[in-house]
Length: 143
Image (cartoon, rainbow, N blue to C red; front, side, top):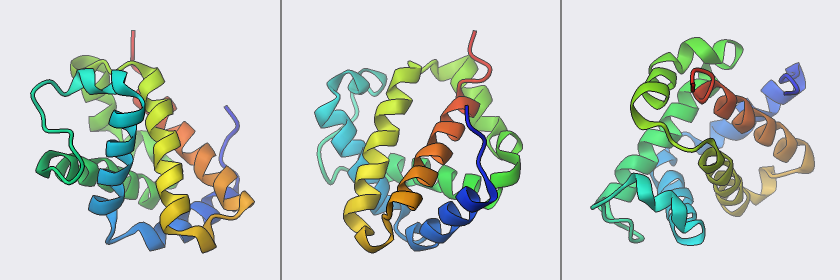
């Protein structure tokens, strides 16, 4: 894994300043795309309404993106900032790590669509590295 450079951190924070306040909408959009395009991701949410606009998608989307907002705020100590989520994913949820890769892709797509002026190649690379680093943290205690 390539560590985040100072430039990457600056890029991620600059883009995320425009995500703040839109966590619910962006998160719901990313999850909806993930569930529709990568259907295997639905298996972790039996009985939940995964249709576009559902209350569950908006609620869970906000949780996902708010966790990322917290991670950005603590970008220099991601493991500490994500410690509760790391434990939950390792001990309770056991989400297939491949699904994080898929969700990361959809988050990037949503950011590109909603923030096209900020989605430069440099910012894209930095965001991709950041999301990959978050994913590596979330699966760090898997056994």
